Image (cartoon, rainbow over all chains, first blue to last red; front, side):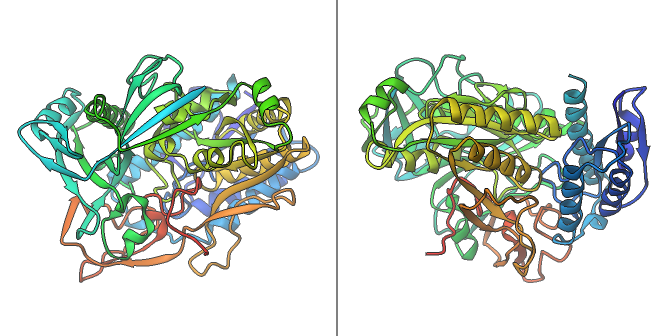
Length: 125
Length: 426
């Protein structure tokens, strides 16, 4: 497998295909982006867009991203640019994820799972 | 390819024992259509209502908006690959029930958005406050997955719209428009000296509830391709998009794309409108590279002088927009991009999640974070159960007096990126 999944979505942790490496962190939306930024600083290339989905930061607490398994010696500049803009974008939105009920949280997990599954389909193609 | 579009001006919609179109008045037997919708076992209930411009009515959550049309002459039918077979459309004669829309509404997922106010300040921000709306409110059977249900409501909307459109088959239209695109060689000779311009339309294609279909194909699976600009007028492109109400393209907007119409208006006068290029907005970054490479290649192959690029959505698609812009410009083809902005409630934040110096000609659909107060309406079609959760709302959105404090994001079509909106700096 040339990538791993970084996620804060428990459904992704449970449901991605066996054999896929998943790094799960029980943190918020912005914090999982910051976690991705640390991997990128360590030379891992970002393979999916950190603002995937039109469900905006603050409106969903969940985000999953694909990162290259192997770390390069230098940082990938495109990855750095994408993750920096995405982190900056978080502050533009009101966080209302605390107000969600179980069903809404589940819906948001399903959407995030679907987005990352689509990307994994592309990555394996 | 030439399409004659006959517009039948709908003056009123009324419920009636008999479904018919008479003297511009659409009579709807709601029971008949309820049965048609409930043929799909995934839909538990459906009810029809009518909302007219100026009324104190709020419709929410809105899923899709569809203009009923019928293919009168020529190959194929409306919504190829969805309702009609996959014959290539865009030629012959099509009739449209103009001035009205079928609005599909009701909950799909817990955070769903989309408000259309028929009067008051909110009405100024949505183009669908100006149409006579037949609203179809559906609810799902218990335990169904949201994507299965989205498909059921999407298809039910198309079935009802096609059935309504059929009523206009033998009606003499009030207005006739003609749109013609010659083949490349003929166009080059006919319009020698005029700049060769195409429209690059980016289609929302990120995944579940963020999808668009082209001749029935999920747009995330396509390589960028070329359409005659009239193909979208027969429903070759349809919406399966349930999120980002302000800047998504409901099916109505695909049928009446403002960029296509405006380019046709200048076709043969100030420019040669060569083609409609469609591309996607995927999540996987290599897909973005592939699609933008192919789009830029098509622009070069067509010998274009300029393109207009429109985006759908925010965030992830900003990256596709900038990739398209940079790569097309690198082929020596001038670009104008159409986007909208998420510049924060005070308008001071960076508007887009990506940028480049090549993007030096930009049209904006407005700031989706702009805050607006929507006063209470006498009647709600659908449900207000979701208003505190929808994008652009917050826990204190619903005020004691029933008014809503929201961002423009919640209003269907408010910052549409094909220019099909009401905002202007003029």
